[in-house]
Amino acid sequence: MIKDKVVLITGAGSGIGKVTAHKFAAEGAKVVCADIKNAEKTADEIQKEGGTSIGISLDVSKLNSWNEAKEKIIKEFNSIDVLCNIAGISEAVDIVDLDEDDFDNLININLKGPYLGMKVILPELLKKGSGKIVNIASLAAHIGLPGLPSYSASKGGVASMTRQAAVEYAPKNIQINAVSPGIIETPILATNPPEVTKQFTDATPAGRLGKPEDIANMVLYLSSDKSDFISGEIIKVDGGWSAQ
Ligand code: NAD
Image 1: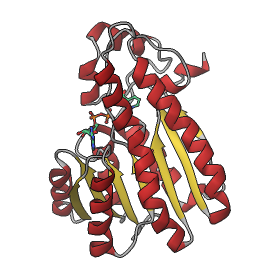
Image 2: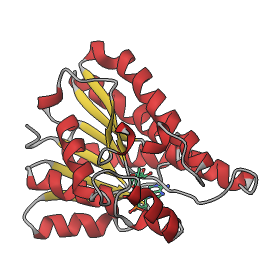
Image 3: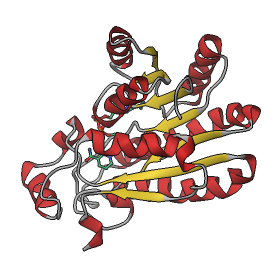
């Protein structure tokens, strides 16, 4: 299913990416943990649990950083089978007060990051004649939420780019999908004022915040051969929020 596949996970130093990295390793994948911080830490944890993993320092907003990461992965594992673009940042600001530099920075990480990842890693998947890419969008790509102007723009862009790339590469046996989490209990929520998090939780029919595992399970499914006929989907994992 995913055993022995080489899986590159960005944002593996924390939250959803970290839990996803552990899950893939437990299923027997060779996991490349990539992040601007704590990538090595997650890889070490996986190794101690008996899994196969390396940690790589990667800034997803920089093309040269992606190229260096690819070189290291090919040297270590010879190929790449799956790319999970999970790294991201959030904000809590009104559009009028949103600083121009902050807008650019968020777009560079959340939208340009997955673009650069696909640009650099797709040639490796093409060489193999198969592969999977899973991008992380957000509920903010589907509905308007307060305090998230550039975040919503970035995640809407990720959803659209995922559909576009899926159509382009489906004939090459590469499936590209995205997951849109609802509100998931991770350190990123520290960006939100607590009353906003409460408001989001109250809006969730499941009556609880999501767990990183809820997202990792879907990322695993979309990375495995069980989803070979699924491409271009933006799958909401949100405890029923958007069904209302
Ligand atoms: P998190 O803050 O726990 O983890 C995000 C990780 O991304 C961190 O380890 C951070 O170091 C890394 N990162 C930030 N900038 C980077 C860069 N330039 N290069 C490489 N890595 C970088 O947050 P999380 O909740 O686990 O978020 C993971 C993804 O899920 C993000 O894309 C986020 O937008 C998305 N998401 C989260 C929620 C939620 O409620 N937690 C909801 C919807 C979508």
